[in-house]
Length: 77
Image (cartoon, rainbow, N blue to C red):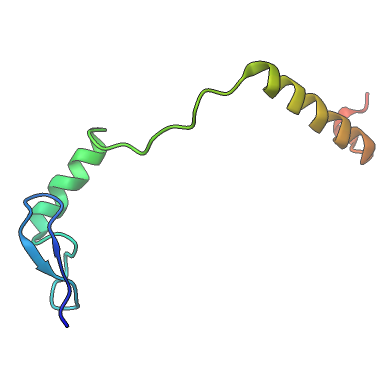
């Protein structure tokens, strides 16, 4: 069975195999249009949620204590 997907740019159906060198895009042009959209930040991967600063400080203090226990010279005077 031949698998087909829609081109992410123009929605043309593309055969998903080695005969389609630009898959999942139908042409190099569509691939470059999509790349340009990423470069212009029109597409984004969602950021991490806002970090609670109090929790972050507690975590950093915990890491610092762990490093001191490991006799790390970074924290010695």
